[in-house]
Length: 439
Image 1 (tube, rainbow, N blue to C red):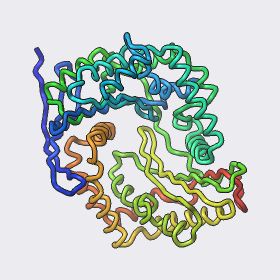
Image 2 (cartoon, helix red, strand yellow; image 1 turned 45 degrees about the horizontal axis):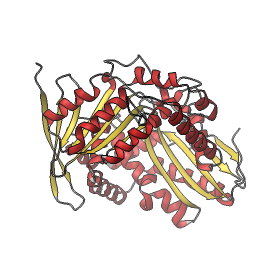
Image 3 (spheres, one colour; image 1 turned 60 degrees about the horizontal axis):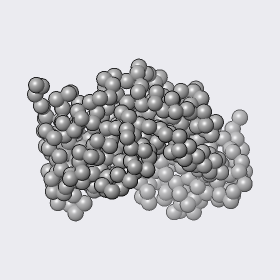
């Protein structure tokens, strides 16, 4: 019999109330060789599991866009001997939360259960992954819901702007295709496509697992083998080409008869493993990621009252990276809003940040970090996110030191590299006064 291994690494975390708690993150390797990161906490009889398979909606076949999303929406609609109604009723009766989701780079899900219902909960997850039914009635119902959502997106200025921006940044790459597909592609997806996705994509070699709660390493090892052990050893071969976003500095206007316009804009970003990522992260906190304290908020909304919302965020993908932002403003003020955003882009690129701005950003980012430990579900998601990003198991212990190490010269260097108004690409959806599309 294979030995059971786990490695414990003690990391520091804090509760919302501010008292220090020790979070013992353990690397668990099951007898069958399946790995998970575990935070054992038996204070409450609850287990939270987060699991992710590498390779998401970006791998959907051309003409079948939305496949991963449709699978994620139907895996819990019947499996094994349970039809949709029986499966959902069992989840409800046993207070089990089970769901799936699809992103551009990942396909995953979550499980939350009382310890007393552990075996049944993990059993339902097992058959959902290995024996999904995809019966006609629930498939038709879920497909209809998705199609209704796609039709609604066609009337939503924000959704239109974001989709057009991604198409512009990635015209010849899967990232340019919508995760939820199009009406035509969703209608074309057959039951065989769903089963093929499950067989080809959900495999042990691209599985990442995080667990939190009332489960020992030994028991988790058994559950891992029982739940995931029958999945294929290897996923079907796949590759996603690396790509640089086509940030060309264009302004694209999509006219829509609405009183307020939506803006989506983008520049270059940094991938998670880049040594300058933390400097970019702190820089963006000051630029547009800091809510009421960001420069964009202060200049666009507070001082000039141009927009009711404005923000920016880093988006590191497996095969690319972007700095994306958005704003909403009255049609008559779109032009001025675009100008002020560009001015702040330029100011950050040329002059960096002040000592006070840097200190405030570092204080907030390190002080707010404990909020990410506010629930066991969030911690489980964090454990998987760390694995996706290739971070070490002791990352939570070191994370704040990475933020504190960021200096003004670091931010100046990164800002000059990332922020360029000649690249800043903007999509406007509405009836903007005095704003023309670029040639």
